[in-house]
Length: 553
Image: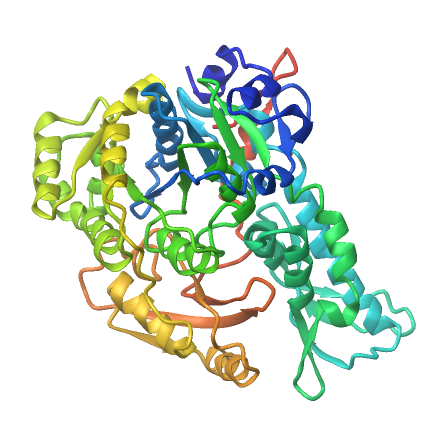
C-alpha cells in the first residue's frame, strides 16, 4: 500500500479523545471537524508552573531525490517513545501547498509513521497559511493604496512583496499599476511563496498575540526619500494584520496513526526561511509531554543551524539531543552513484558519501553543541556489510547508529532509536550558537559559511555589499543571519554534492526582516518563489470514485 492507502486503512479516533489522553480539557479546544482542532494558547499559560518535557531535535543530511524520511522518522520516534511508556508529543511544521503540488510531495510522514488526516493536513488544513497569505497581501495593498492617495510617507523604495502559497515562477517579477488610472504609480513588484513571507517568520517566532502585533508593527516595508525605513506601524496596519491572524495563532492538534498527539503549526521553509514550527506550539508541547519530538529542516547545515542560532537563541530553548536522519541510498548518491546504482551494494560510493553524514554529525555535535544519534531509514536493499561499515565509521567519532523501520512498522520500528534518544537526553549539553549577535553581519555570515559549510570564503555582489552597509548604518546589524541557499549541498551549488574542492559562498542579496528580527542572506541561485517541475505532482492528484483524495504522497 502507498502512504495515502495506509492512512485510509487506519480508523482514527476523535480528536477530542486524543486530546483527553494528553490531559487537554475540552474547554481549550475549538474543533475543525472530527479529527482536527485548535488549542487555545491559554492552555500554555495555565500550565506555566508545570515542568517542561525534554526537546528532541530531528534533522538530516543534505537531501537527495531518493528521500531521507526526516518527518517519517520524527513521527515514528514519537510513537516509539509512547510505546515504551514515555508521554511523547510531536511538534511539526505545516505543509506548504507548493511542494504538495510540485515535486517534494506532502509533509505528514509516510507508511505507518504518519500524522492524520494526511490529505487534509497537506491541503487547506485549518487555514493558517491562507490567513498568513491574506495578511501579507493586505499589507501590500495598503502600501500601494497609501502611495495612490498622495504618498504622505514619501515612499521612494518599496521592498514588501506579495505572496501566494504555490510554486509559480512567473510571479517572481511582475509589473503592477498599469491600469492608467489617475494617481496610479506603476512599479516593479514580485511574489514570494507564503512560507517565505516575513509574516510567516513573525507568526512562528512570536510568543503571544501582543508580541505578534509588536513584531508585525516593526516590519520594514520600504524606504523614504531620506533613506529612512518605513514600517507597518507607520501605515497603521499592525492591528488589522493581527486580527487576520488571531485564530490561526492558536496551535493545531491532530493525531498519529497510533493515536498519539501531534501539534502542527507554522511552516517556514528551511532553505529560504528559518525552517522551524511556531514557538507557541513548541512551548505548548513541552507542557504536555515528557518528550517533544520536533523537526528542523534539511540538511542540518540549514535546519539545525537556524534552529540553534535563531529559534533557540530567541527563546532560550535547549534541545536535549538531536537525531540526524539518513539512508544508505542517499549516502551512495552523495558519493557519486546514480539513482539506480544507489539501490545496489556499492561500497566505494558509500565510503565517499559517508563524508556528508560525518560532516553533519560533526557540526551538530562539535559546532552546535548537541549530542547526536544517527537514524538510518532501512530499506530491503541495504546489506549487513554496508550497515556494519557505517556503524564502525560512526563509532570512530563517538556516535551511535540506530536502524529505523518506522515506514513499515510504525513505532515498533524505532524502539531502539527511542532508547538511544532517552539515554542521550540524560547527558543534555548547552547548545553553542556559531556567532555572537554584536558581531558584524559579514562576520556572522563568514562564521556559518566557514565553520559549518566548510567554505573557504565569501563573495558579495555589489547590491549585497550596499544593503549590508545600509542595515548596519540603520542600527539593525545585531540580528541573527538567516542564510538562504540550496539544501542539496554544503555549498551554494546544488550539483556540488562532494564539496571536495575549495568553494566559496556567493552572496547575491541581503534583506532586512525587522519584524522577525533577523537578516536574510540569499546565496547562489536560490529563489524565494520556487517553480513547478516539468511533471508536477499536481498531475497525479485527483478524487477517486468515492470522492476521496488520491495522489498525494
